[in-house]
Amino acid sequence: MLTKRQKDNVFKKFAKSEGDTGSPEVQVALLSRQIEALAEHLKKNRKDKHSRKGLLQMVADRQKHLRYLKKKDEKRYTTVMKKLGLK
Image (tube, rainbow, N blue to C red):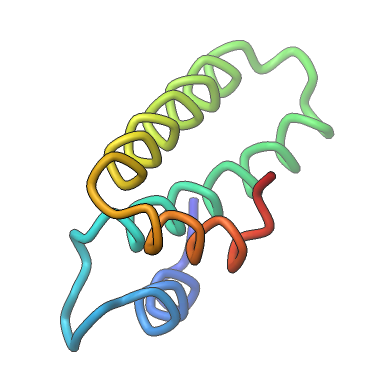
């Protein structure tokens, strides 16, 4: 679970305009931060199967957002991928 401050930092870094929380770039960045946090949790708690399922759902959701963004605008897609260090 991300704190409000962590979410605000993601919004500031990836938002296209003031108050933007729904653009694909912001959603992908937010999901990436949540995935990182949950992966750390699972390193300590290997038997937490419910959290593992949630992690897999978040990864699938991020992939859907990335596919949409790539289809919609290739330049925005590559920018987000570089900023997040994916691929």
